[in-house]
View 1 (cartoon, protein in one colour):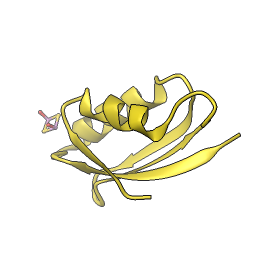
View 2 (cartoon, helix red, strand yellow):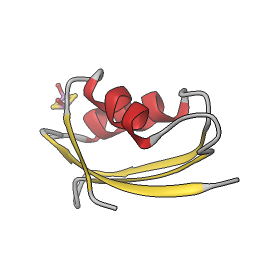
View 3 (cartoon, protein in one colour):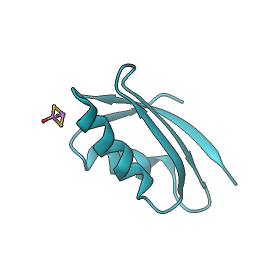
View 4 (tube, helix red, strand yellow):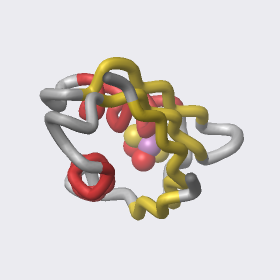
Length: 72
Ligand code: 9UX
């Protein structure tokens, strides 16, 4: 199964920042697809809700040093 969430990410200032976050998300077990857009400060993440919840996705972002706010 697949669930999609959108997340606002605060504090990214360069493409290296957004790549760091995107790579971190893609490495999380249960994440099927993750795209981070620097310009809009948003991430769109597809994940398996049987494996993890959006709270763990927010935590994975915050572990990289950026603030994460669930949008949808
Ligand atoms: Mo470059 Mo982004 O140091 O914080 S990775 S600005």
